Amino acid sequence: MNHSPVGAGAPHEPGLPPYQVVLAETDWDSLETAFGSGEDLPGVLARLLEPDPKVQVTALSELGELVGHQNTIYEATAPAVMYVAGILTHPAAMTLRPYRDIPVRAALLGWLASTLHDASDEIAGFIEQCFPGFLAPGTTVAAFRDLRPMLYRAVAPFLQDSHEDVREAAVITALVLAEHPALAEHRDHLAVHARRVLDTSGYDPNRRVAWRALEAWGHDPPGPEPLSEEPWDREPHSDGRGDLEPPF
Image: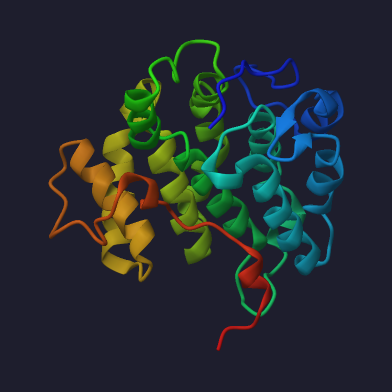
């Protein structure tokens, strides 16, 4: 995990800036990634809008390596997440995934949930116990966590999406975001969606996120926690290169 202050390229406007603005006005070269500067990120981010779904999913995997390698929040993570949140409404997000009838939008939301989980209360709190000051104001992770209310506004419209996979990915992302105190007013509404995930989802990592949100918010989740594991293993669905291969 990274302790350095967030760079000047990570905007903090109350409303989510248009993805074109994030791409054009972020000083990517000055921001740290897992493998040096963020000079390659504009090209990777732009490929998320290509018409070829294989190119899109490959770019999403590359993005995860650059700004989320080893579950770390880097200086470039914040603007990259803002860009991905900003393209959720783009027509390219409705491209169908390779080998499956699922919009790329579900993969984008799944990537957001996975990345946000790395700065969740549970994970960040665990690391703060080991490294006091990890969440001090001005650190990369603290600044990233401050973006949650703004990101929630970009994700919330998809809680009622017509596609089941998009809805579930949006719910999991929203549950992670709603840990922010400013979003507490949405938790009762989100609890209804969390119960639906527990009732209908066949993916235990997502069911675990829903179960733990209900528990944390005093909503008495049903049954035992799905797949109870160590904190760093409690991750929602994320996409990887494996999704480029046909299922067997």
